[in-house]
Length: 108
Length: 108
DNA sequence: CTTGGTGTTCGACATGTGTCTATGTTGACA
DNA sequence: TGTCAACATAGACACATGTCGAACACCAAG
Image (cartoon, rainbow over the protein chains, first blue to last red):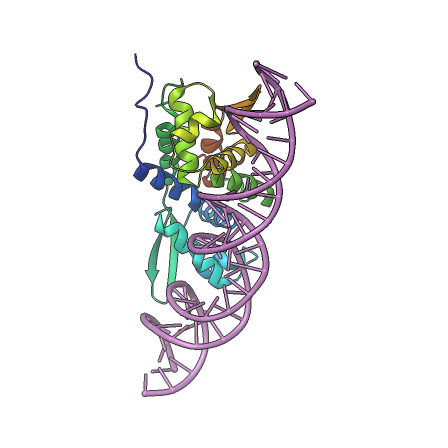
């Protein structure tokens, strides 16, 4: 059988790059990990207490993660809880398969 | 059973971030895809022909990918062939599991 | 309606990044 | 040895990004 369709589109490349870029910062990785480890939606204030950076910066990073839907905000009165969106477990294997091809034994 | 060990280290966060950052650019994704699609080591010149950017920029991106060992350079006379290192298929699932935890059904 | 707490947005700043052109460097070969 | 081809590196530039402090917006009680 043939090997791969030779090209991904520019749009695909941009989309995949955006996904990877969302996790290209250690602070964002830590925030995502905190949300996953606690396994519950957390307020901005709670996250700020667990990370050595300012509150406005945390808010900014959460927005970055929310822009690609890796976290989902839910407003609750004056507070905002962020929950990790577990579908981001699947987008990276998907992207890697699209980039590298799925002929390897370990796909699916 | 218990849920997760609550924290990843700063070093882990930095390492994972570096992996994701390597693929945070559309051009690098396209280069990696070209190498995977051709399924053979390719010279810098070949890659330059297939991508709308200058030679020095391609060289720079290849270095970035090589720094995290997603591609492997092999010198051949005056030329340099780059080959995709398929182990990068595995580092992303590994990183995602470490960040989000492996309790989901689809691990392993 | 005023006050206070919780997030968001703004402005600023230093640093990082992608790109280009120009210059080195290094083998191959006449 | 000199020249050419193929990459790599350096310098420069515009633009993006991470961070901070300050100002703003909004909801909830009094």
